[in-house]
Image (cartoon, rainbow, N blue to C red):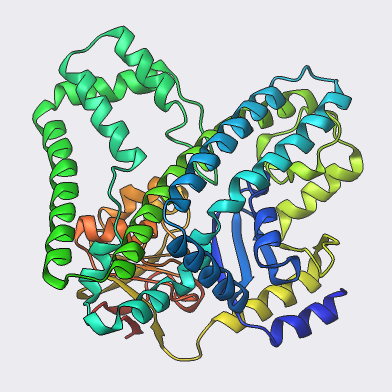
Length: 471
């Protein structure tokens, strides 16, 4: 499909936007979406580190319904699927260890290892893609199934919330337990367990014993505060589980509705586990591999991060490939699978036109944006667009944090926000869960908040009606 035909395809289809600050070298999971909704219904715009994926909305709807019906029909299928997924995730992690330790110059083994890594990545992500499909359609499906119960947004949020602690919360608790009885062995074990904790889609800084020692010593010096943080984590989870049981008792749901809520809660927990196993742990190793490539080619990691791992066939990068990386670093480009998965990379003015056409398809002409209520409340404040750690310096207390989506590494900015507004997300997304924990108004799934508003805009977040309004 040429760019002109692609534009026609864009303009006659409906799209759902997802994205984050993601470096291309970490962006392989999109290949799985090619299979999930069709390569012709997956378009990726990469603007430096800002990554935007546009997926066929109707195709996601069909997949979401298909997955939901299958898991509701066969009891135990989801737990079996997750068990099998964990096995593949472990294989993927083991294969990546092989890849990053191949001796420099062994190009034949490199090619084979890259192919295995790509294959296992697709296998590992494929069964989890129901989570993506439900972001635009989860609340619609929930309301259809639960219409007769007339549940409030708050009740739906509780019923679909996680049953387990997140990996960020578990690390916090484990670190505090070491502060209570400090030993070098315990610090070393903590590092081995959570060495990847700082990894994100944008970067994966190397950690060491000194990093965890510093945090633990800080807990020792502020023991009372650290204990309060841990108590708060347990208290919130127990309160949410208590609310969940109370709602079950109040409504006496039929068996199918109970299964549905248990399914959504399980997906909430699975999303976090996926984030750990398929993002943080994988990207940590990928970053170490980039560092090896950097030394071997005498090029900065910042340039090599524009590699797609599919590009990699030799340890020594060709001049042609280096020029492509420089082009990607300077301006946005578009990746498109095409109807028959003939991967296209589009650059320059054509890429700009395609990116604008896609954004126009998901944006609203009105000064108001409508999204899904994650946590209710009404607040006015100044917009701050926060997609990356480098954006934190802009945040002031009670600013309205506007992001494509939120992730654990954005928590320092989230904690001072007056409200959260995201382009993407559904009932089980990170922004929805943390807003309920922090009790700050939150609207997710607006699709175009980051392009509609700019830093400093005064807006009203009406999370009683799911509307964000520019004042």
